[in-house]
Length: 481
Image (cartoon, rainbow, N blue to C red; front, side, top):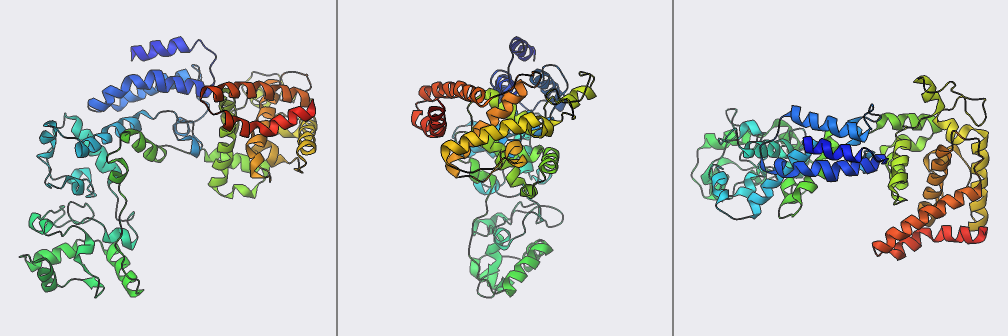
């Protein structure tokens, strides 16, 4: 912990952007914990929360958090900032051991697998069993306690989750917490060895019903008790039986399918912990729905009736630039973390809430970037300039300027996203100045960022990609000179 604090204290002296600080957290702080989380039992929640507090203090420069941490920890494609969630990271590193258990060899495995009741370990890890139902003893002080606990937690699916015919028929019979006899999961080795593993193995496709006991015995050539067979059929949840019956009544032929499982995702994968983390981190955190609602109200756009449009637009702005500074700014802008005069006046940092440019209206986020007459004039000049050069016709609207929403050829989308982003950032940088921003001033800023991205492209040997992206701007600059 002290090493993490020392490392972050050194970097706290630098004027880093939000995403710059998050990158420092990932590379210099979280990296110190990876080995310990991978190879030792999970630390207490108190410890993880203490570490998280230190990280958030660094991210927000020892001030109050401006964005909920549950939003920060979500993936960028869902409106988050991709800050590492320590609890999910610990869980994903533990679950990655299942992949090693399945794919690697060594005497260390014998200590673990000797207590697993099924020799077919792949089937065991597909059994859909809750941790409390595991028919084996695990040392409470062992890392494997956490591994099995996390695995069961994230691979177990309840009866309600399994709601279609294909998934039901491919559900495992043995060690399935949704199918219990006497309130216990069951495993009958002799039946398992006869390839009776899934609900579909109890089903007669010719009659569209479950096998009678005699037909079942004849098919699998086993000795059995009719009470056992009836108990097994009775353990199938009533909801599943209803779905099966409905499917049969519709006369839809059964086609053997394959039920997806977390094991399919990580088995024989070299970076399974990272894949697991990406799969589950959004489920443990939050999306910025409140920001979505506020922007929808501000621009009065029915296009935001779905979350997909919201995330699509904020991601288009994120990926239109390589600049960490611009990415950090547009993320804070989308999250409405912008220091307007209305906000500064509310917290006592400004004597007035009125806009400095027009001195007639309250400066909120909509007024700062759209409502002020100076802003409308600037937007008109920028759009006229682009329309004349590219021979297109786009209109200046509230939704286009505030949220990057306009009808345009897909070829020009990255270009327009970037230009509008630079305009918004330049306006924000000059919000306390009476200096009038001009079209030429915007062009000069664009050239600065193009030079930065060109150097990055040359370093990464992606010059052609850079040229394709900036071709439209090269045309604009040449025509303007």
